[in-house]
Length: 457
Ligand code: ATP
Image 1: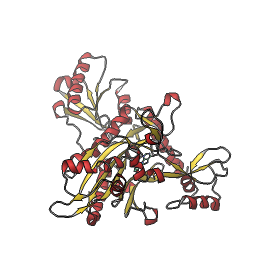
Image 2: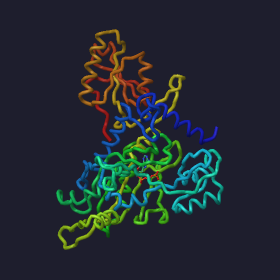
Image 3: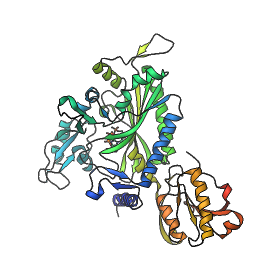
Image 4: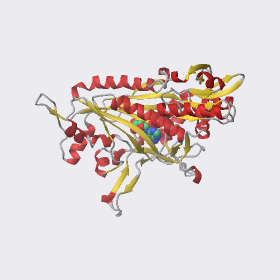
């Protein structure tokens, strides 16, 4: 079996587990789905929320130099004109001349073993002709054309040019447009940052690879405003913090790679960009980005709105438009990296076992509580007491009395529950329970009063 098919098998196993156990479903599944959209079920939404809360705690709550915002998704169209998205937020589109199926030209080029990095659409067109690249069905392709990825809509009852708006394709612009509001209400010292989490929408030509490339997804972005002469030290600080983040969500450092984006592949305004890539089961792909964007965005806002974006440096007469370092995290890619790191197959008592080795602080369920036998009222009653006690302390606790203990363990293993607690006859005598560890499958006896909530990140 080739390495690739093994990898894709792993991806398929994860997708199937995610569906079977209520993590992630195809969006609008009951109506045949809507391509590029995904719905998070009870466990998936808890996992995603844990990841997002950890990010918020690490990068906003725990820091004195960070401010959080939650801007509207619909924004004045001038935002996207000023930012350049209306003119240039486009991917190269080609069409299969026989089947009329549409594809992203740079992806077909990559699939054929070449690279379209840094190429203009014209150069991509030439490369397709030169290398004789065909559609996945083996047919000829149309010339490349530019396809803008923003979802357009109209705000209000009148559909004309002035009512055009877009579902935001990134959360960053909601930060830049609030730069002055935060400065005027909180008077932060430079350097400082503003963070935001929320939905972003891109009309991807060909969404693929599960949640990796979706049309609706979630971002966690930071704009860190710096003195133009001091950008390098802040860039380095964020580079280190990105590594800390990867560690905090349990990604092995050997699976995370920095790709220093060469000048010809960077946006024209960026003086340095690092793509952090991860070894996903689908291959090494972008997990998140870190970019130095100079004063491009605030400068655009100043130019188009006519309002000053200058900041008065405290204790000096200096006024300047701050430069910005942007760490940009995608939630779906973090979820996929966490799931693929956690997915483990081993053998227990000669039987194949599938489990999610999730870090305890990310696991959707921290404890499962069971009575040894569900038809013994005294055990059930005692187990309920333990369950309610833990639920009050920890929150994410599941009651599980279905099937025999072995089956319960397997079920909890599959959803990544780090600990299963069983109440048996001994509990009634000495107030001890068994705690079974997901990873080692070892069981230990512990006093109820000694059960500790799992450690935080
Ligand atoms: P790609 O090259 O993979 O399309 P990008 O460079 O366009 O990504 P950015 O614009 O830098 O992505 O967006 C920041 C982050 O948002 C990405 O690193 C990724 O984690 C996430 N992201 C971007 N597009 C998608 C998408 N279609 N689905 C899920 N996550 C996405």
